[in-house]
Image (cartoon, rainbow, N blue to C red; front, side):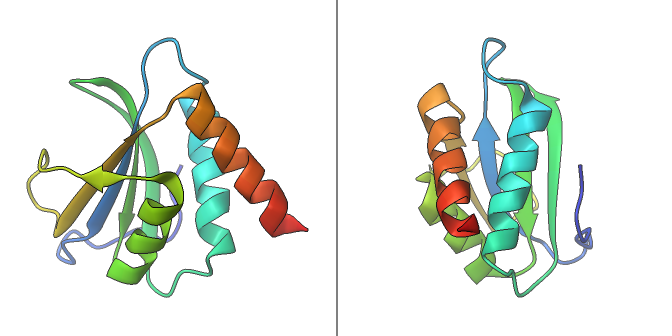
Amino acid sequence: MTQQPTSETVSPFLVLGQADECGRPIVETARDLHDLIVTFSPKGHYSVRTLEDECGPAVHCAFENKADADRLALSVGAIEIARYQGYRSERAFYLSEAATREIRRTLASRRR
């Protein structure tokens, strides 16, 4: 699932949600994250995609604008990591059941 694709030359800011095999369906979680990003009214281009990496299923949210990435990272409690080359900053959080419930709660409150 992708929205407003980022250019590979932009060197985007990454916020990564890491799941495990027992977690919620990753595509559903990616949709929730996309919907959360939309509520922030991002100022730049962004991309939300699912993939399988060495640690299992993940959702990569890449942003052209650092402030947009900061808003998502703050709302999901992402911490700094250094795992992928080519990103200007990388933050990650674990897509636990509690995290996905909180994302849905935040979405519900922003939609009112």
